[in-house]
Length: 118
Image (cartoon, rainbow, N blue to C red; front, side, top):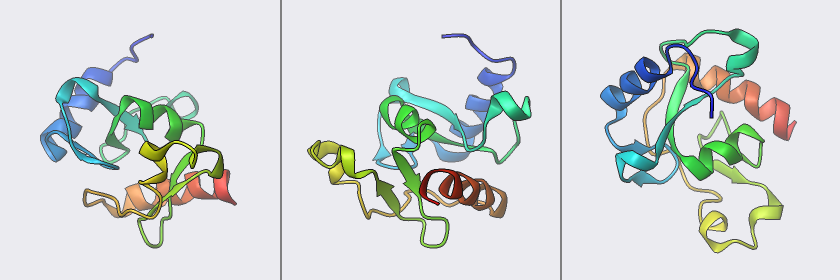
């Protein structure tokens, strides 16, 4: 995997803010946490201070492709129907975000929601 310029600092800033908390599942080993952008880094080309969350690697991938989304109004996880046959992911459906977020993070979650839910 190609490391993006500034990604290490971006991840460090998220770890400083959230510790070892996956925003979707809670506490977990640091080794499985990734700095997930809430927007398309490829399109924007920069790391925004409040532009990300720490997510477990599998959830990061599922978030990026829209199979996991966060309702921006309620901050509740929405898991795509096709993942409900996997107990691990189905159990997350309807659960609340595990970290506090800023207004800009909520805005990016809203954009993600509109793109993938509608």
